[in-house]
Length: 143
Image (cartoon, rainbow, N blue to C red; front, top):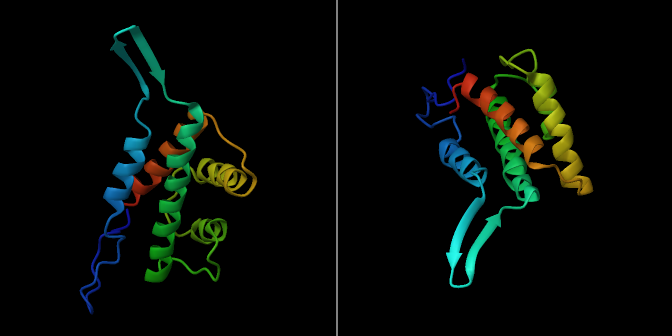
């Protein structure tokens, strides 16, 4: 396990993204079930959240992964000359204890499809990749 919250002995600054838990809480709150029934004066009204809305926490999840990897790169945990998420993932592959690199990488490719091509994922896919990133962050001591 990596100590993402470790402090620099020389400067006392926190190496970890200071608000990683807050950001993750936001992602998790955006993945909560979106179905509810409300009684109105004309009868019951059912409201179901659109499946496409889960793409927002999916994008945010990979953004947070990118931030964490950037932080670890700056700490010297792994070497990488690129700012790109995919390159940082590849460079960290043998240095971090990835539990399911292939699944997270598959999600990164889906994220690229969404971010650069507008290819939306359904709720099940979004949840699968968000969960995969959560497993990695927990394993690294980030959550």
